[in-house]
View 1 (tube, rainbow, N blue to C red):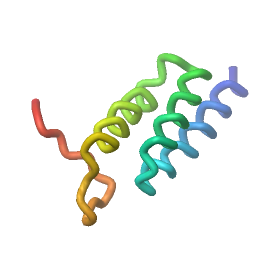
View 2: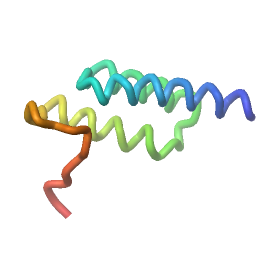
View 3: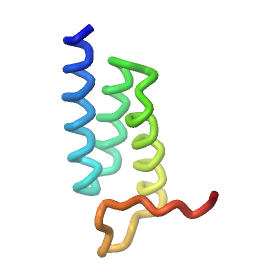
View 4: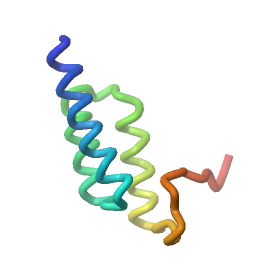
Length: 72
């Protein structure tokens, strides 16, 4: 179980770096790889959704990594 968590964390952190560097497609794939380890990982699922949103509607050049919700 501990090895599974370590692998999940490794994949998640790699994908998060891709997300922060605005590499949306690669980030989506990375978070999906994390979900292969734990399909119930909420943060990975959330970042897949956010990455897909940014892929469709890229943030401005002044984006600082903060996700701004457009609807409630």
